[in-house]
Image (cartoon, rainbow, N blue to C red; front, side, top):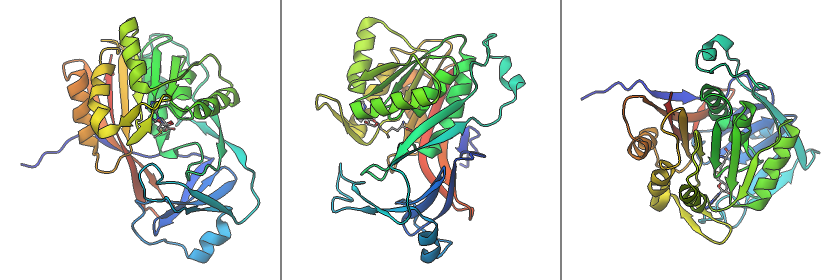
Length: 324
Ligand SMILES: C[S@@+](CC[C@H](N)C(=O)[O-])C[C@H]1O[C@@H](n2cnc3c(N)ncnc32)[C@H](O)[C@@H]1O
């Protein structure tokens, strides 16, 4: 049987002035974040580079070299940055949401004015884990969260779990949401606070906690949310050493989340980076946990980046639920 499924979408950031991917190949990607260009390992770039090594070296400000722990669980991304040109340790990039026709969304907005538009200014830095503080492929999730937060009515309550430096939290906040940001690492939450301030936003609820423990506590308190966002890693730890293992705990986490999401005017966004997880797997998980009945709309797909040579790198999969 051949099935054509219509709700799978392939999404990538469009027209982002401060980010582009110049080339990819031989296990690396060459990216520009604002004024600075870096060469970082990208295990999914299985093809060869389109530009020469000499051209990469000429363009890059810095290149990340994996260290001895590279490839070992928990130390996959540890390494060092080799500086090829002068660049600051910290710098900022801006993100303005994809252009959206007001008429496209006004029908759903319940008269909520567009609070400040989708605008964020995020601080970047070279970490010893090859990351710079932003996962740029997440931009289309940010757009979706911003748009759908507005469609939930005035001041929807949005909870972001495994929230990192806060891109998705800020997107919800830009739409006027009462946003709660949960991550187990204090430094990362402090980084997200800086991003809130540089984006001209305030009044976000910050929680340093184990995500599953927090959700269970919210169930006991009887608290509910209109929007839930989850971007769980393959492995992680709560602040008190609680073990997070995606394969073992993801479905339990989603079932617990189903107890704190509002029955109507609600959304859920699940994003997965782990290898071997497909968009349809994310879709089935969400449907099983949140129920697949009339009124619930589900979509799923892949978040990708496309380099200047039209080579597409699939980076994560997502599933989303929306209930009017
Ligand atoms: C893949 S990152 C999320 C990326 C982020 N959503 C973004 O796009 O910018 C995973 C995050 O989960 C956090 N984390 C890991 N284990 C956790 C746990 N048990 N409870 C809460 N947060 C956890 C990490 O500190 C990290 O910030």
